Amino acid sequence: MIVFDLECRAAGHRFEGWFGSSGDFSEQQARGLVSCPECGSAEVIKAPMAPNLARKGNQLVSAPAAAPSATPAAASPQQPMTKAPMPPEAIQLIHALHAMQAEALKDSRWVGDKFAEESRAIHYGERDAEIIHGQATREEAEALLEEGIEVAPLPFPIAPPGEAN
Image 1: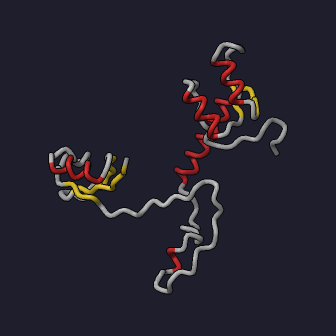
Image 2: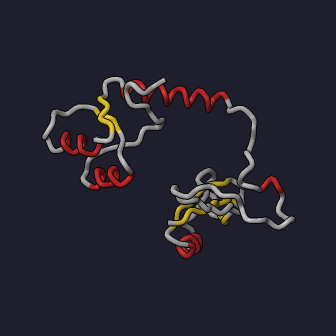
């Protein structure tokens, strides 16, 4: 799948479109199947996009190679984007998510790194059903999902019992 930033020529509305390939976008556009979700206009073009060059999770951030002098210093990935405080709405959202997680976990049992094993035991009826939380590797979580065992990551990290400040 490929994601394109799209723009409606009629009113300048910007939105995202997901396609199987660039050719799929062109074909659907030619058939009049791509339209603006805000105004319905079929005059839609690809908008300029910044490339998404994600780093693998196991790679360390290293100093960039010597950049040509034409590159402005502001484009350096090492510089912070802003030092402005977070908007109050964002802070409220973070606090609300934290409170929801705390509420969800108050009746949950910490199982540590035995999360995958305990989840399977509960799922297959080897242990009584209960709400648990713990730690699992990405591979363990993916294997649980493939077996039909519902798991979800927590929005905020938690400290094991007895290890919190």
